[in-house]
Length: 509
Image 1 (cartoon, rainbow, N blue to C red):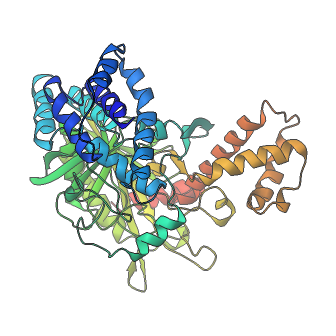
Image 2 (tube, rainbow, N blue to C red):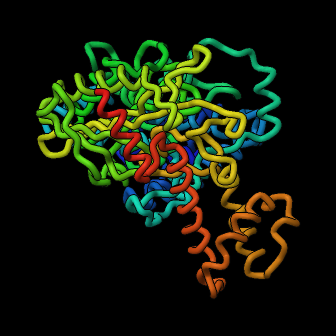
Image 3 (cartoon, rainbow, N blue to C red):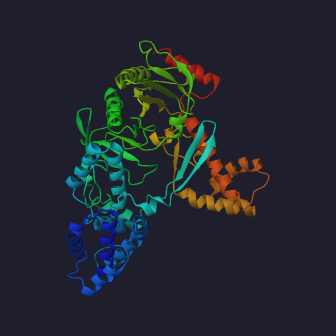
């Protein structure tokens, strides 16, 4: 059986372009070695040769089953110590690593396409490769639940992320017993490329990185394995150095957008609570996608002293966003640096904005850069991470009444208008549908009791709830909750008082 599966996998590689015809025999032999098999019989080759060719789509649809059969064989034959998700992920990555060309070959092809065709052609190639190699597991990403919801701020995106597998108890226990390594230092370090992984660190034999230069320093360009949106990429410093929002951060954003004008690039904030990501390694996130925030119009134009030539204004968005636009990105870097420096030290007690308390700084910015036509844009989202007794997780953080849906930090992706919600919600929503339709007491079920008050509030809005519309109703109401979560994260609310307070800050620039 395993010989047939090896030939099927190589056929997958040939179909998708992962494996060149000249590398077919070499790849077969690498897989034979991996599975500790000495040969393949002639009749197996003949049988494989008689099968019709596959299209790209057909190859994609077969990969999950091929790998599943291979891992069952590996476990049955003592090549895999546990038949659980963590160990299967470690082993199937090892399998796929046999099909992926060396970094130098992939970088050469990327650079050729970039120079001879376009940045778009280069990223199209690299994104497809990242999927074909199973670094981005298409069959898992397809399971994610995604929908759009109308809001007062435009159409926002909701996703329940199911592509990130949960660790099983055995793996968690094993991870505790594994010595914490310093190689790679974190998941964003360039040393992950080709790394075999361990129970407390994912395997990356099928992972490739494109070296780029931004702000005259070496950085890496890769995709996120969990693709929360189209071509979700990560751009990271090749040195393991902490994130910091400063002038250089703005320069780096625009250096990248100059290289890849069809991509946006943004940064998480550099303070806990509002950071939302790995703060220990300098990095950005971007991609080929237009979020609701980018589509949101400027609600109130402003003229900033010394920067009269820069178009600026408050964006119609639940978070507090100053958008600045100019054909010369250097002007945006200068203005953004000025805004950041003033905001870091800004206090407005009336608006409950404090630059620091007890020596702890609170103000920072979540920036997002993009190019629209021949004009550069930079969205500066004002953030503050102050906590109180009433809001111990953060005043400008999802408030307790919404924690049943979203308790986690509001990071860059959420700021732009995409809710990344936990996998638990899928099962909870299915249960809720059943309980609502059957009129059962939601508070009697431990798994969904946290949703009882929420359901009680929105049910009266819907005079007729049926099996056909209940799913759509819950999706809509989740979208409304996420909108409120974003409003919680706004340091200035979308009210007359909030806009006046926002203007007080802008007048200090």
